[in-house]
Amino acid sequence: MTLFGTNLVAMVTPMHPDGTLSDTGLAGLVDHLLATGCDGLVVGGTTGESPTLTDAESARLVHDVAVRAAGRARVIAGIGTYDTATSVRRAREAEAAGANGLLLVCPYYSRPTQAGIVSHCTAVADATSLPVMLYDVPARTGVAMELPTLLELAEHPRIRAVKDAKGDLFEAMTVMSRTSLAYYCGIDELNLPYLASGAAGVVSVVGNAFADRNASLIDAVRRGDLEAARTIQGALLPLVEAIMRTSQGAIMAKAALAELGVIPSAAVRSPLLESPPAHLQRLTDALASMAVPV
Image 1 (cartoon, one colour):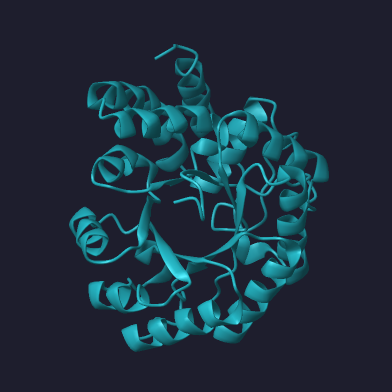
Image 2 (cartoon, rainbow, N blue to C red):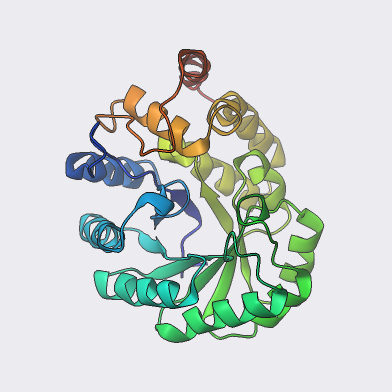
């Protein structure tokens, strides 16, 4: 667990309205996440708008977050692409930039066979000395990491964890029972059931705004206090719905952070568009509900 932390946040990438990276926004976001109990910072993942980041921007983000965090949280670099050679290069650049681990998404769009997924992930894991967290998100990639694939990849000494955004809890429990892979819930709606089933932690989008609530949820489950855990998760539900079930997680997480004054702008890069008024109202109402202590 300590390889990656337990209360991880899939960080947004703060930007100016013209689409350039915001150094001030990034520094403020890292400080906010550390202050609210985040012990793992996932940089340049899906929520960080990775498809729109250049290689240079990705490496710069990892470096700047690592410097700002100064060892107070693990820095996990999203380096996965649909091209193995590019993913290998990005992995090496992330290691040089100061990453503590790698987030490796299943190759998207090209829809490789399961053998191709194993080959891709093995090549990336062989490229650096960093531990690897696999990212299984078939709704985005078009192909899932199947059970035999996960079992095979678990044999690699540097493949140590899975961010599961597939939502097959039975499969997750099966893999956890048969391997040493640490599972992290990558679906904010299902954080509680995953944690109760043995997940090591969460990789949360909603945690951009309220990582402290996720920290309390993880602690409650670890104490065996499921009643407290249900209360915490119940209080989070309006915000989870507003961020994850309106336009898009990255868009709404940025809107929440801007509303809270953590980042100066909710700007996103095309093809993403900022939140429409109806979504912002739902978000404002959900944020107001978070002022009620649990």
